[in-house]
Amino acid sequence: QVAQLVAEYTHRPLARFLGQPVVNIVELNLALDALQGHRAK
Image (cartoon, rainbow, N blue to C red; front, side, top):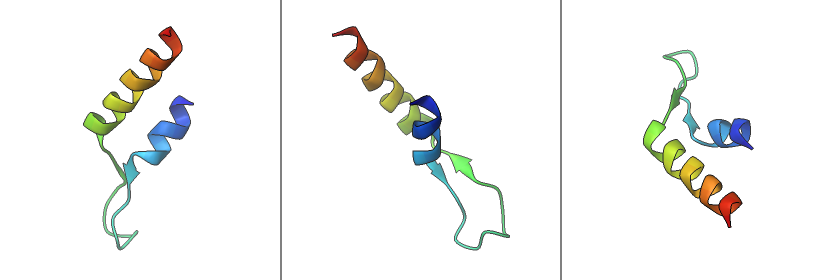
């Protein structure tokens, strides 16, 4: 599930040859927190 979330929150530049993919860490952390909270219940 973690790998799926990382892929979901990875943004690629419009021109794929101009730059590296970037992971939105804030959104990923919020999603991981929600996942952890969901598991705890």
